[in-house]
Length: 511
Image 1 (tube, rainbow, N blue to C red):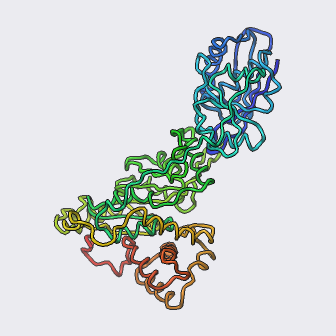
Image 2: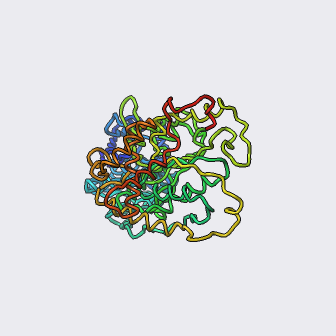
Image 3: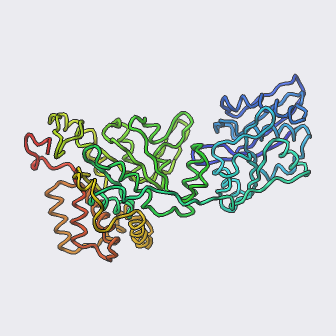
């Protein structure tokens, strides 16, 4: 009268093992579930009862106690319906219990016994394979389960098929990695952006070294167009990186990712997004936009319009590459190694510095608008580039000279990334002795940096970012050493750094 079934819970990016213990005893017919179940799990008793009866099985008229162990681990969702149903059937002798020891089960049951898809299948598949057990999942999760390498996952459409498999009357289908489709995505071409030579150059550097990029300028100059073309410059993801990205999207319950298996993600949340939506969290913590942009690009348009508290929570994950969400009982860690591209106007009306439209903002309004971004946040942007207004000739005339296309620049990015492969990390992640070794400077270059740092009041973080950007520029030119011209170009991309008080002059808020 006792049966044990294995399944997996969902806890952040992990899939901890849950043991479903079902005991039948004498007494008035009842069914109780213990082990810290949430509402959706407590309601499973009604779904399981209807599914068993509609599938042609007998629901035991006994006192049924179901324990979900470990007891202190929260259980949510309908993912435990299938293991609970199989535990009742095994305890009542309607299915064989021996095969249960080598299998794990996940799936929500409809009232007629059909299995419905659940979130977080991919981490569960990986975890079950690690302990040598095969996982049985709903047929609707087939494509997601196929993303796991060397997985032996079994697919079932309904409860009856699972029971036939356990009783040895039929075999369930095994999903293989051959189901993965790696379509080549179609990105918008950089040649659509007319002019803007310097911003395009900055976009190339950002793609080559994985640097954070800030674009500022009047509205309509092409900031959003430039940002949307960055993913097309990035190389495809490696297998391990693609698996990490797919796991995050699986936990978030997003659509099938197999068609975008190697495509770096691109996320563009609206400026009204809350802190929880951006970094993750909630009563049942889920990944936020920064985790969904893991190994890809996070585009923040109209950056000063975001709530300042929301922006400040980005500072730590931009450095650490992960976000830790703390709760009273436990901490959850989500990966968040993303590349930020931000866009902003120079003032509230957007026309400060426009050659043909007069700005009507006061100096205090401009200072207040630009002051929404803290100095530490601006420090974390390696490239701060102005996107100026283009002339009508540049916009309406034909492209003259070499046309910079996404495909052409992507080859340069791939060459620069291959040079970084020997260092083990992208240039944006160089730190400490690795940064000093990769960016060995001559005495003249050190003197140049020292004078610029003293003159412009750069922080140590800004100095290190300049060195990383200069290393990327050298990689694009296939130079083994960082030279003065690389440093000078990198320093030219620090347009928004706060200047020392000695350089500020009264009434210069518009400058």
